[in-house]
Image (tube, rainbow, N blue to C red; front, side):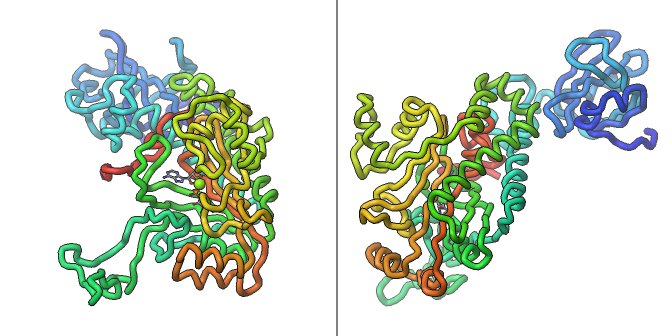
Length: 465
Ligand code: 4AD
Ligand code: MG
């Protein structure tokens, strides 16, 4: 092979006029190969774009023997001239002059032979599915959204604040935590009361994987002003739904001096920014997903960007649901924790727009939310999305030490002294929210199942790789 600098397929196809007539060097994986006795066409993909580059092998130059290893899934290195294409479906192609096969992929064994494998089948071979068009699109969009998150907050002067993954506190108080221990489970040290003696454990106390970085985030916000976290969170709820993962990524901004309205404004601006960013920077991938999976995807994304979200108190929401005349599987009454069917009725049927539901009953929300004057509701805000349901959960925080201590004691929470110090010393009104990153990716890709928007999903009874 000659010494020619490798060009990615995204670069080549994005700037074809610059490369036409020159010798190019490309590397990638074979998607398909077809042809006749005289000529063979290979669709080459290198992951940089959903598009494939057509490579033309003239059988006067290349023998069957040489091309034998060029099959779906094999990895190759090609040099040749980039020329305007004669055929339909592509504007340029490479006339192969040199071929090197890096790795073969035995057609009898490589599972991704045909097009149109079901998503369920691909989930069973999750280690290979990034090689499919569908999944590589999702992964590129996922990357772009992660970048957009950092860009949005950085440009606004927020600091990226790293909260611990191993923690001794249960932020959401839901008790759905994975325990972290180095104790020998076959031979646990016990105290006189018969309970496990955690003083013998690695951290000298009971520890778990975090369900949220919020409480530590509040320490950051009450020092730096505005912070955000972006990291993995872990929940041991036994929820086998298309919206729940046991390990998911969450973005949690926390802002000193923000009231609930400021919090809602930020949440709406943030989510619209991320969606716009994807529309602008992932046009090919979104078009691909729209064509193959979800025709209405681009319209749905634009609609969310162009329309104001409805802002509605929980109590009003309950009235609408009660008056809807709809037969819900779960009954509706004031005080109920809304089920997905209720949220989706409000968003998809009643308003036909994203809804920010506010002022929930305090009993169904976490201890840290600011109590309203009515003494019954808290300054919570959940952003509800079409097809997804809850995409963001947030609130204004209780800044009064007295009220927060009362709530902590009512719920019997312990070990919260460090958190209460934020209210003891220079407490301020502040607010924040959490966006489930995979739910955002789900919305932007139009996928149906959250297990298909993260490379290695974790859910009950599944921990492959
Ligand atoms: O509503 P949640 O539980 O809120 C919190 O954790 C707060 N500490 C956030 C804050 O105010 N800083 O979770 C926030 C979001 C949900 O709206 C949802 O999008 C996502 O996290 N989420 C999940 N995503 C995937 N799988 C799960 N099991 C999820 N649980 C929550
Ligand atoms: Mg929530």
